[in-house]
Length: 124
Image (tube, rainbow, N blue to C red; front, side):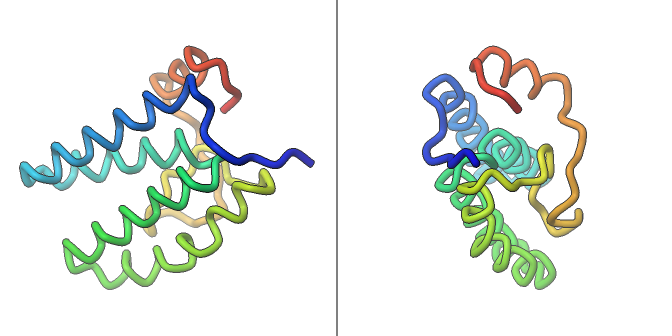
């Protein structure tokens, strides 16, 4: 069993870029675009406990901002257990992390994100 800890150095700039784009769109009131960047950050960071947990924390805050009880309630278990599942390498690859999708269902990774994983030299 492989234990994952921190996000690889080659992947971190792409993950951080998605979080920066999230902040930019969020501040400018473009909530759909902001959420899309959180989902992309989730997919990029979901193998790594700290990155994974941080995105779920941001998703919980987003749910509070938009007053979505469903997102708030749904993010709490993801926030608690997501990082643990990452640590032991048991994540649903490609899952975007929101409550609009089942938490354990894998999804195909969009081509652009696949290319980021390749550029970063990590497996998706």
